[in-house]
Image (tube, rainbow, N blue to C red; front, top):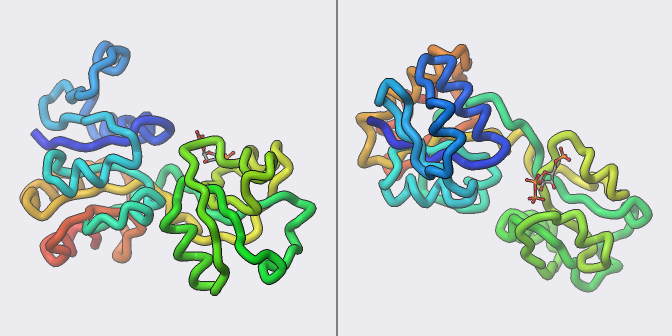
Length: 230
Ligand code: PRP
């Protein structure tokens, strides 16, 4: 049985539907329970239901054979992993946003830009690359509140439909990563022998694999997984 660390939340249903289309179903009774580990009825896959940010950890430490999470999570975690497969759902952007009335504001006018975000590393890398000093205010959700209440000048956050920004009077200033928040598979080197099973699941579900996949297995021996991304 292959153990998969599956991000709870918006991508959970899409991921389980993908496996279901490949014939690997989880019983409704399991999904409606409070169990944190559920299995497919054919006994081939076990899903460990985790917070998205924890998925790389379960994989990197080898307690899960593979994982499904957004690339935003991988970028932020900096886990030493391999990313061979794009599942083609959960598309969104990681963007810098702010209040409409200050969109044209020059960063040079701000001694230090305060940035509210769930992604302190991504935000720091982005602004440092521009030579802009920032103070990161790390938040765990409802990040759009920060500029509204004067907690921050900018936010770095996921944008999917753009509705949350719009309804809170915010706009995208710059896109840090386009389509890079796609869910990802993650696989540690020690379970290399399992990799083909996950790739097969994707193929049999009609998910087209690309040579340079924008999704992921992550592992320590990238060579051993290179064939999975082709
Ligand atoms: C995410 C993200 C934005 C919102 C973007 O938050 O942080 O707030 O979704 O989606 P949209 O562009 O479709 O409006 P999430 O729903 O995960 O909740 P959170 O604020 O608690 O992190």
